Structure formats: C-alpha cells, structure tokens
Image (tube, rainbow, N blue to C red; front, side, top):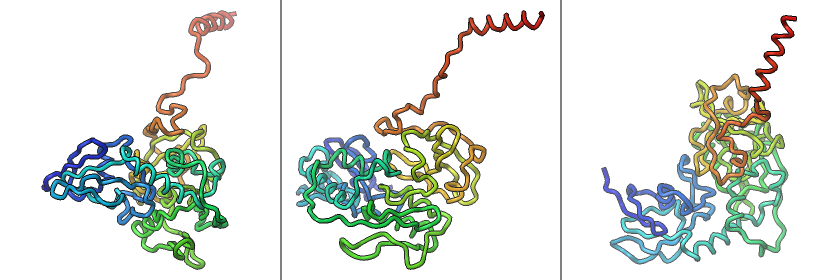
Length: 333
C-alpha cells in the first residue's frame, strides 16, 4: 500500500492517498473549505477542468519544492503533493477570481429561476448567491435558443446550459451509443443531438440528474411543483437493469418524480434506469425506506421532513372516554 501524503488546506492538515486531487482531499475534510464544482463528477471519468469554479491557490508546492504555483489552479485537475499547502476561502485572490468565473457563467444564463424546474436544487443558484456580483459588465446581446425535446421524456433548454459536458460523459460511459454532444466551437458551442436523432436508451434519464442547472429537465415533472413543497423519501425495488435505489418526491400521496439518490456534493450515488425513473410512479411499486436526509442549508429542508408530521388535531382522551360512555348508554336504550 502506498504511503499517505500530507496536504494542508486552509490550515487543516489531512493525510490522503497519492494521486488524490485537491478537490477530493478537501471533500474528505468537508465543510466550507470544499471548493464548488459545476463540471467535475467523481462518478464520470474525464470530467472536470471545464467550469473553473474550483480554482484554488497553491501557496506551497511540496516539501521538496516549496515554491508556490504562479497561477490559480483547478483543484479538480491538480493532484496533491506531500507537504502541499492550499488556500481556498482564506485567499482573497481566489474569492475574487471565483466572482469573475460566476460572472462568465451567468453571461448567457437567463434569470428565469422563478419558472425553472431546477430552482431549489440548482448549483449555479447557490454559486451566484455566494459569489455573484450585482451587475454584469457584459454589454452584448445574450444568445438564446428555442427549447427542444431530445427524447420523449427529456427537454433541452440550451439557453441555460453552461457546457459542463456532464451529460456527454454520462452518455459515453453508461450507454452503447451516444446520440448527442457538443456542436460548434467557441461562443457558438452548444449541446445538441445528431441530425434526426433522439436520446433513446435505458439510462438516458441520468442526463437530467447530472445537469447542474436547468438545461436538461424531466418532461413528466415540468411545472408540476416546486421541490421545496415536495417530500423526498428513499425507496428501492428489485430492478433487473439497475440497483433500483431511488428518491421518490411526494406531494401528498402522489409521486411527482423519481430521481437517483444524491450525496452531499450533489452527485448521484447509483445511476438508475428509465423504468425506475419514468414508469414506476406508484407507491406500491417500491419498498419505502424512510424520509431522505436533506442538508439543513437546503431550501428543501425548510419543512423538516426528517420528522414525522404532527397531527393537525390533538386527541382529547377525556372527551373520547366521555363519548364512549354516552355511546354505550345510547346503545342500551
């Protein structure tokens, strides 16, 4: 077994395996020092290095070479070295650079959060709230696209896309044939399907789960409800195609949508098939495990769904006993 290497991030030292990225080392520490990531996805090979939101400052390269790195680096693509020292939230330079990155991501992104199905669980929303600026310096016309259906259950709103490539990697690594990708170059780049093609495979719905914004949405859930009015519940079923471990989103007794279970970093724990996602929306199809644990910082946790709901009308035991006595007397008469 390889020896551990020591890395210090924002003053906190941790021992990690050689080859671990700075981002994953920070995730092992947890808390506020974890850099945000819009394109990196630990379950997808080759992801990362696109959005630049995870920039950090390496103030000490290693014990052997203590010189700092001359520029900010993408933590998802930079491996740790023994003795490395990294600054994230403790560096004003990183905070300022992250504001610039967020400004670039929002250049073409529309301000339609009130009507977007991703609102409430959108990573770009959180990022813009924490690091966004009040005004933009962009003076040119924003590019816009018409919404298109790239499958019978998936809708693409390219205007919201930030070109993180996650959906492309999902299609490459989970399916036999990818039907969509990045077309064009530079500011003309866009996600689209090949001519007269549509996404149609057993795992196509996972592009919805991995999308960090509202560019790829579930057509069966569009405009049905806001996520903070729904109740997430963990459930599973015996599925021959996938592991069948999902989160059911309830409104009353109705299952509005089914998604893969996501961890604290917003990444799906196990990818699920389209049968589990779209075709089994009855409680009788599932074995219910219990309420989903939601981070207290999420708007979804506002209603404290981890607790069982209290009865609306409290039972008065004295009144119940008196009614029983009167009922017995009336029965005898």
